[in-house]
Image (cartoon, rainbow, N blue to C red):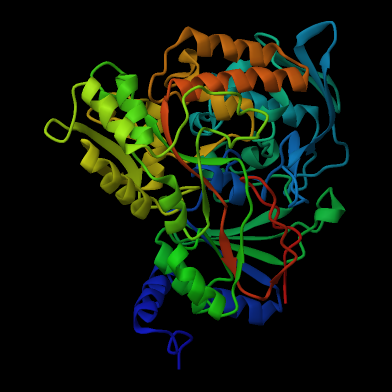
Length: 545
């Protein structure tokens, strides 16, 4: 009898699909486990492919979570050890950093001594500089445009860098920039020695990557499986993984992930669908949630010719959806969003426009703009079927579509996979490939002011320099961006971000729907996991009973 024989018929069908999607990976893993008596954690991701392993992962924040902070470190890491408070920056490959009091465009980083890359070579200032060059100098042999694209434009702030000593470097910015430590929490460092050893090729490096992280690369089968083993020599001995082997499996379909978990093919899945939770709990599965810096929005196209160029239409869209109903549909996995951040957050501010469910006011605004049921707004939104932070995108988008249709807003969708969605974001709404698209349903990180606000609102951050897909072009947002970067006092910086958020809501530049509660499901055998209030998570404390 197979592991799925006792499941309901619909679940058995999904289990068969899961087995096919996994390409027999579970058989390989069980054989490996039996041969080596290893403990193995198998994770079903929402991505449709393995995130890049060369140093700067793609696949959005799921790549950051699973092939970024596992295989690599940044100069700055995140403290992910607590579930009861937002995570904070912590020393990584740098033990200390500070801005030069005499020149606030210059930062000095003290590097951590005694760290080895997975290939045995040394981490030092030369390795740090080599990695900075790979992301900034187009004429350098190690320059990699694909990795540059995953830095979200942040390396564009860097004016230069210098080796000060074997374990000390300086990094300079074009203008004073108080946000620089945040950038280096998502910029990772790969081994120059390994790159040379594999023939100076990033394609070859992807087949044998080497970082400094708590996990080492073991093997990869594209679109099927990535295996990593614990780095017993990791520089932070408190974070040497408690599990011998980590296996990542791309399973973009939510029901297939559930079937894989129920049939024992994986131990952990990201983003379980809400309607599967009762069945998962009946099977003694753990459902773990926590708040974190995530908003599920539509990024709107504000270019001339788009219906959302009219603020009345943008406001009507925001007033036309019932966020409480969508949250209930998500089974508590989402909280209504009335802006980029929730009320009470230091960055919320005091918007005069109150986002709420008010169909009557939505109809009035649409009529004022010349629209209604007999002359509807027609808009096409690009969405994905799954992906990093996308929650349950088909169900949620279809609910929005039905809610706004009676008001006089006709929504159609272009459905793509997550990788194509990322490419759309990078191209911007004025690219020929985006013609006819009026919105982008792209889950958003606001872990820091740069990604949460500046890169999406500053007119200087349109493609290819940032993430202003919709072409928000207002001098006020540019001024806020400059003030935030120039403010080194954290409390005063928060006040400026709150002013920027106030204008963002009052101008209704996006459609805000919910804040994700970051649900994941796992078997009772998974122990020791602490779900941090962050997009990334620390898998090193996880042990398998």
